[in-house]
Image: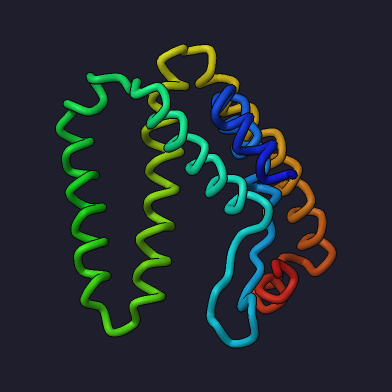
Length: 165
């Protein structure tokens, strides 16, 4: 139900979900090696939400068929689409097919959300400020927490590595 709710919000109000993702990215935790030796890892909860938002965005695109033509005609978009095509094409012939497809899907969700959806979101300049605040507020909290935590160990480099994890 949560996934379908996120997809629905992604279809109806993708702008809100992009701002939620901006807030969650600094707070996300890297989970390494999900599934006993598969090498599959992810940042939780941001990456699953980004993936679900990508699915919602594609559903919305196919239902509405509306995307800003200026974005599609832009030379940077053409380069990005060629880049995605090339990653997909080379993944088909990869010796580690699963890894290559995961890499392609990762690039696809990042580009869909943070290029195509963000371009639409940032067409309203107030959303740029909202996005930055949604990202900066939790990041400031993380920075303050880290400084306090490292100050207890006199900011020694050898302690910085194990205290950061």
